[in-house]
Image (cartoon, rainbow, N blue to C red):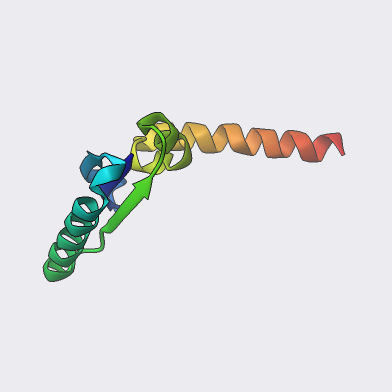
Length: 91
């Protein structure tokens, strides 16, 4: 699966999300280019990415910031920090 995402890092908001089958790579790449050009014309600082993953769940695990709200990101960071601190204390 291919996933086209437009993300506003200043607000942590996903502005656009669409999925394409692997056989639609040319259409997905064309859509990414069109969206990238629109973002550049608008002179906004948005990320436009085309990602590939076997499932949307896999994509959500590897690129969670495109899907999580700020509270979920903070909770994930806190869990990660606790794990790292716990490892350092055991050494």
